[in-house]
Image 1 (tube, one colour):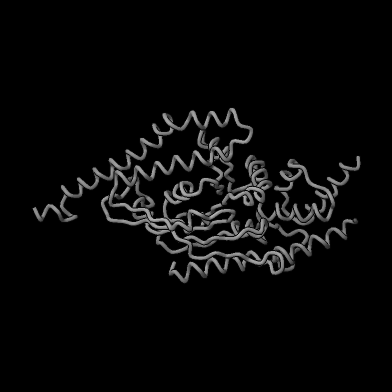
Image 2: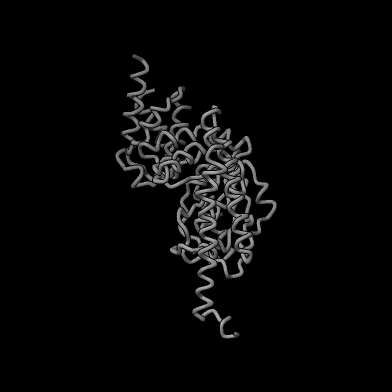
Length: 85
Length: 262
């Protein structure tokens, strides 16, 4: 799955499941949309379904400091790369 | 003599204060010496010799606070606690409740043997107490390091915990109400209910603030008072076919409280 394809899926989740209105790729998810740690865990669960693998606890912990959608895309690419090595 | 019975009489006020002070001290004595003498070694046993002490800790917490409220009943007989049987029989649910006093979480811990709750993160850093609430499976309110690990672990097992009969109780206001009115609701409880497809019970708790008033150190025991808890709504959404949004759940809970003039 390309970065763009994954981005579109993530945007759909933010709009349909988290009720975001017009999320921007560099919006601060917490400050601009009230996205909190429980949302982050729910999102991680949905991302696991899309990506077809489970995140480790350490990867989930690292995800807690993510602030923007672009950060999410970078984070997923990093994890995918580390798993292919 | 009749004059001495009036509440403004200095002697009567002093006597009331002495009784309040005695009851408060009895409760603190239980907190400290009751814990050390009767409970500390039991907590230690389960921490050392069981693989997963969470449920044992929760049961002990529940027993500890049941005894605490018995002491309140005995030492302050004008205080009554009335809890609907159906409240005590709640299982496998997210339970939300209005928040009036520091006694409220203790009441719910006493009520539910199998419970988790969300606790202010700073409590996790208090020696012994922080260790106990961590072992009890309670969840820190924030996910910043070093609390993220605890939170993730507890949330990973939340679905099975709820399915096995456990309750997650939360005070969605996050703080005690100072005027009895319901405050702004944090929607974490509704997010968790939605995520794990759990029913939501909405509780109304009354008068705990008359016994232990925010901002006061002593219990106010001389006034006749009935603390009660009852279920005012049970929300069981059709998560499969028509899942509600978090804001819909929050709106319904707010509406239920406002119908009760909270």
